[in-house]
Length: 217
Length: 217
Image (cartoon, rainbow over all chains, first blue to last red; front, side, top):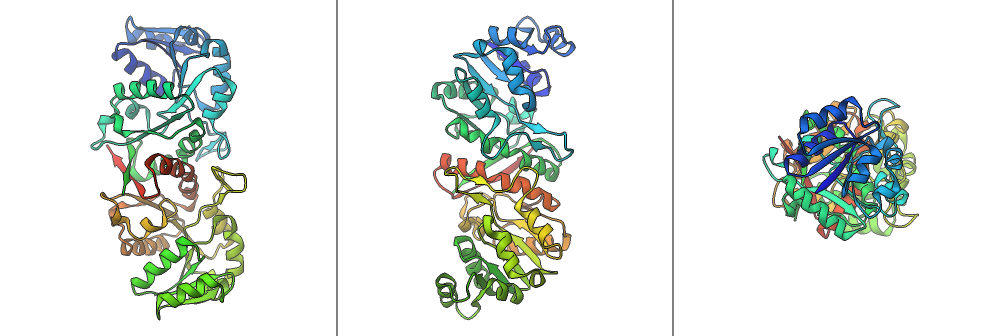
């Protein structure tokens, strides 16, 4: 499959590299196709990895990952182009963390809205699935690094899009029975508002290498 | 120990009854000491259970649980009286859920503030510990109902107060190694902002009888 990964930060590079390893063709999108990070990633990634600007990547991808920083995701997707996203599955991995007021970060959107919903509203023809924002980059693509299975929530309005994303997540190593479908994209509120707890837990357990498992009665 | 439980909802009654079973003297506080719910609870609770108004309960308790609805907690504690709370451990169990705009509920405070912090600021002489707001009432006092141990976060600025609350939580059945000290009261933001995810998880797993376990690498 040809997949666009928008964003060249740790999350984008980690997901992009995993997708290449899995045999996909990956176009990583950056502000500029000649940016240092994106060209270095593409050079290291081998023949299935390439670099483009946001628009070129989104046009090339059959499926698109939004791995840009949450605070600028809407703008980056606007540059990518609504037409290039139309009809495609758009996996939104971003967290709208705002560090401008110091630590701990605020969310730039929460409570009665979420970044996932904003993206779905701004790009109504994209099939947005919120996923992976609740764990750190290395666990996203290697959940087996933890000693017990843990759970990964996802949500979105398009059932076929969610099924496709669930399949991709299974290929990342997430067992199907540990993927929790939280329903429509409105559940992105809960998935994104979990971040302040995640940050506090990271402090309590001493690092980002953790995830939660839901235990039912 | 003589403990005040402010609030006569499911959470207050469940915690009050557990504390009586554990041998504590419990004064449940309501708007009115002659309210139907509080007098019925006291009548069923036996000789260690009694009813009072908010102020009378807070005055009587050596330690105070805030189990009022989060949206009215500050007002209820004002009625309870700053003087009656001064120097005492105040366990804040409340979630500031606002159902006035329909479902799902909003939080009436979040992101750069929390109910726990508001209470600590409004009652600087109380020793506020946020705890138990992340699980449903019956699990609060019976975590062993789940098939595996799960984790319970708590936070507050006063170390001795947190140690006292941790002891109480252990008496409720929470193993000490599953109590996660998230640090100062500011971590109440994360604990309270978890609620929208908790509600979505409740929908996904089919009921409120669940909790999470933190799995570390």
